[in-house]
Amino acid sequence: MSGAFDPSAFRARICSLLDRHDRAFGGAGERHVVLRRQIQNGDAIHSRSTFPGHVTTSAFILDPAGQRVVLIHHRSLARWLQPGGHYEAPESLEDAALREAFEETGVRGLMLDPWHDQAGLPIDVDSHLIPARPQKGEPEHWHHDIRYVLRAEEGGLDPDPSEVHGAEWRAVAELDAIAPEALRNMRKLGLVRP
Image (tube, rainbow, N blue to C red):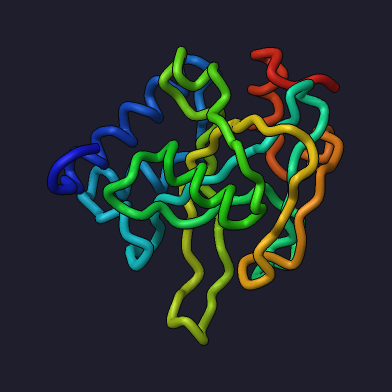
């Protein structure tokens, strides 16, 4: 994106991504009801202070063979997940995923998987509830997570302890319990090996 940030254009871009993603991977059913409603309502989904939800991005950092993935131990949720976080306007969604991945893992030389350039799509769009954080004044809310596949050489983890409890290379099959739709899509495209 260049120039001044346009929330309306951002909503239109997300709506288009949802439509094209549904055509490429099958309808999302109930997965995007809240996000589509927020788009129709004209909500500022680019802003982390917008409730009932806002856009986040995350990254599945794969090794070159597609057999291992970097997972981080999330500080607030106390779970192993892919790295990710809040979108920050006016950056691109892809740049947001790259930024969050580097900030949380310290992996250098991250590259967007070439499939994204060809398809112009994320690998997954997942809306999930985040617990309330009264100490931050945040009610329970939705993260509308736009997800990308990144590639990196295995090794080179240098997680930021202010961001995460740790980061590790794990078997890609562990994504089945974390992000099953994303893993299904990666398998469909041949981006990962079982």
